Length: 352
Ligand code: SF4
Image 1 (cartoon, rainbow, N blue to C red):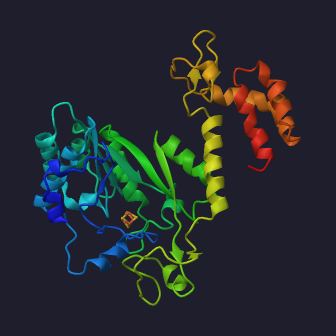
Image 2: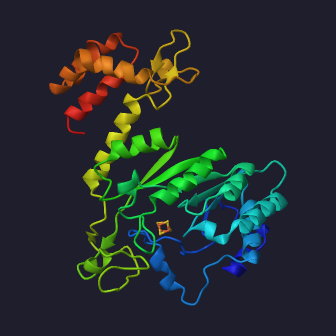
Image 3: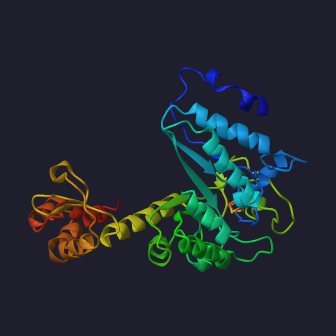
């Protein structure tokens, strides 16, 4: 890999993509906690006697080649783990220096950083703010949902420490998003999880990733104990290889994952968390951004909620019961600026 990285940029194939997204894991699979579903912790078995740390030389080659390889003016430098804060702040201060050294005139660089949040403090967050990092914070929901699988090496939940890290991010005004896994513990709580992120943490951006851990009949019992540093009874540990037709008991079911996302979507629409486009001539809003109402989009919060409630109160709910899409779209809603919202209850009535 080191030789490959040392190749000059002019050797780039002519058909190479103009831009791409690469996740760098400078601490390898090393982490300071021990999530039960973490497929990555077991990967250290692939590199025995390796310290799992990106060297200063590799860091410089990586940044230089990443910037040289882009033919677009925007480049994303994305850091992930394991837990990247284990590399210490100085490593990333050097990375920022190298970005300044190698970026070409006119090239803009966005740095992103995914963390479990445990080591965040004033120094980290001041650094993120100063260099305009976008930070992803891993949280699985309110305390008991988060702590179901995201535990430290002593088996203790990490919720309090993650919230401590979140407070540092907020205090310093760091732009952040939430990365949430959807698993057997939180799969029935989509709305609650979403409300926690939106209302308690003030998150504007969220990602929901399904936990689907594959296993075979032979490996399932061990896999159910976790892939982590401290597997359960028996003390055996597996290298996770994504094989088998079975899944662990931590995995989210397909239907449950769909319901989780639907619950969030409906909450998002009903509570007006999204920003509808407004029709300039009438002031009416188009929740789905149809061509008919195309126009500028001033921010407008809360109006979707009230329009939707009014819509349901009058005719849409009864139309949905009859699975009557035509009725739902013709009676009240034709007069409503929110015509398209009536399809939500209709769709639910049809079992979507
Ligand atoms: S925070 Fe959890 S999921 Fe992420 S690398 Fe560490 S142990 Fe794995």
